[in-house]
Image 1 (cartoon, rainbow, N blue to C red):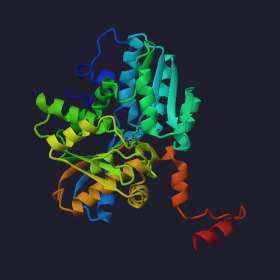
Image 2 (image 1 turned 90 degrees about the horizontal axis):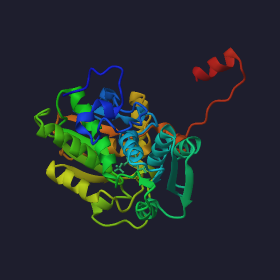
Image 3 (image 1 turned 180 degrees about the horizontal axis):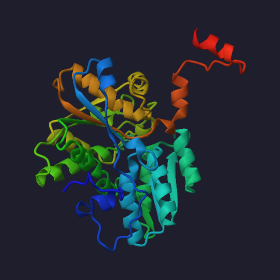
Amino acid sequence: MTNMKLSPWPGVIRAYADRLPVTQHTPIVTLLEGNTPLIPLSNFCKRHRLDLELYVKYEALNPTASFKDRGMTLAVSKAVERGAQILVCASTGNTSASAAAYAARAGIRSVVIIPYGKIALGKLAQALIYGAQIIAIEGNFDDALHIVQALGSQPTIEVVNSINPVRIEGQKTAAFEICDHLGRAPDVHALPVGNAGNITAYWKGYQEYHRDNVIRTLPRMFGFQAAGAAPIVEDRIIEHPETIATAIRIGNPASWQGAKRAIKESHGHIDKITDAEILENQKALAQSEGLFVEPACAVALAGIRKAFSQGLIPSGALVVATMTGHGLKDPQTAIEQIDIQPHVCPPDVQAVLKLING
Ligand code: F0G
């Protein structure tokens, strides 16, 4: 069954209820997430001589401006169903924003544990305004996740990181939407990899559609990490991960095995991308297509370019890349990399014309 004709869009749980662990009695906590656009990138392809049919799944258009809302609607609904009173998560920023929003919607508390000083400004603003209790630890995401894992045994607490399998279930709906939209699976699906929940979730979604004959072929899963935070690529825990893409500044991903399985089973690929390439591709996407994504997303675009140049993706392939979060979440990084100051001038037509004409 496909859901292209649902109108108005009811959110991912109601759209895909038959494929999710819910019953009629599950209280659905939703902000009508999902149904995000699949946008073709013809200018970007032309500019970089990519002979591909390339689309981005623009997850920035979810209610809290990242893909996390797909898993969060389900995690929070299930938490409320079992009577949990406090949501807890470790986060590089987007999970905390989403958890805080859905907790507010459900009328329960949220506590978010984040690495001090390493959260993009917009994400911090989100957690604050949604009313989360924010605990900033003097450590990184991996340290925060350890703490959260220990808290999960408390009966009133629900951990809403992707170590909660329900999060993965919700996130797999993005793969369903892509297939529903295209009428098939892409040849290659590329995405940024941090804690590795999302690549695990997409692969699960594609496999379920394939098993049920909704799609005839499966995509190859291509994951990309930041060069300073590439534990899966390097096959070792990175004690002190570093990258400008703070969303994926992770050295010991929880779903490491899920990512490895997705790549192996799909005959996919995993590689790492430098911070310079991340910034270049973030800007290139914004200036060629008018799409502003956060730095982590650019990892996938840089990765596609690299893989295409290495001959790992054939000409003409149908490729989808997930743009996981909105660029407005991290305004500081964008402003710092654009080396142009606005022109300041008197409020005068002639003065403005003079500037326009150079
Ligand atoms: N892109 C963005 C914008 C993210 O926020 C994340 C993860 C990823 C990609 C990677 O996804 O972890 O499933 O491999 N952010 C988490 C967070 C870790 O706390 O917001 P993943």
